[in-house]
Image (cartoon, rainbow, N blue to C red):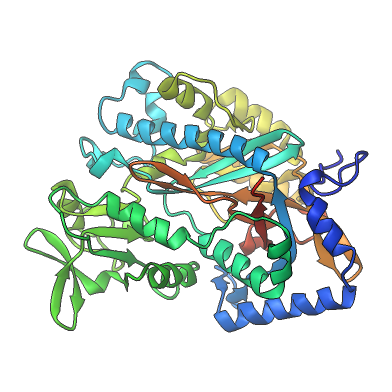
Length: 470
């Protein structure tokens, strides 16, 4: 299957969104572009834009590979995407509020009760708890793939602690440094105000009774976390404190952080710590990353935690397969952005099909992320398929499977010139008293020829994403 090329599709040739960029590109010296690629790498190295690779002894800290050829989306395409994303985000929040309260969707039989009740991401401790403003997912990353001119699909929802926004911001800043003339020539919608929008969005959902400007902090697991650069970056850009669990304690029914002047109350905590480690008195008693007693403060309404505990049930990959039903149930409309067909391996007929077609499918863990724990059947060896089949048979409910899609491609700059590589897109959504979507998002690109795996942990890179102001 031939992939749709977003810049130069066959047989029509250059697509309109790339007209201005292509005119500029044809007048560039290839040697200058190669040098600009080196400049970009130096910028990233100097800035310290790295990520940790788990499970590897060598090169545990790596640079995020960056390609200087932008991915360009027309204003018309973006409007359609934002409509679909807004609809999806509204449904996700309504679903979370419902399953932790009336559970109408379960009673209606639109989602199986056992899929929620037996799900490790569902937190009984959140039953009856309604966050400020009724918002559970304050920050969402929606992964979108494209397979044709007008064919966009949601690959997955990231409703727990979505990462990558710092790379989106640094990609844009780097491109503006390297090619300022391009941004004078082409009207590209800005993304650099995201940190201010994030702070405003978080402040809007401060706890009831807080009338002054709320105190906001970012909770990080620490410098060994793969996304620590982003935690520190966002705290700095928002002008708020970056804290670890040992910096916080419960004081007089509120969460407070240690300062040189004593403990200061925190009103909004943007946490990048998983649920299990958030409160050792409620969840994992061995956790040293969270704050003992924070869930009691949260349930009392004295702190906003973004994203809310228990949101992981909304981005579980088995729940994902029910998103068309979830969207229609809560919005009364069909989904604007479709799902990828998904086999739930917990169901005997689906499991049988997946086992018989393993070499043709992509199989993922329902709670997996970062490209870990998955099998890309067409790219796997016979032994890899056999080994994975054993894991699948041992715990089928832990997996879902999807067809291998021919993801769209965008060109990257190689030593031999432009070459197509598969891409996906993660737009970032902020939810408060309104929904705001930053124009663009993080384009991830599979730098290896023919590869469909775009995750940086698996050898992928990133691009600047341009939404045209047309």
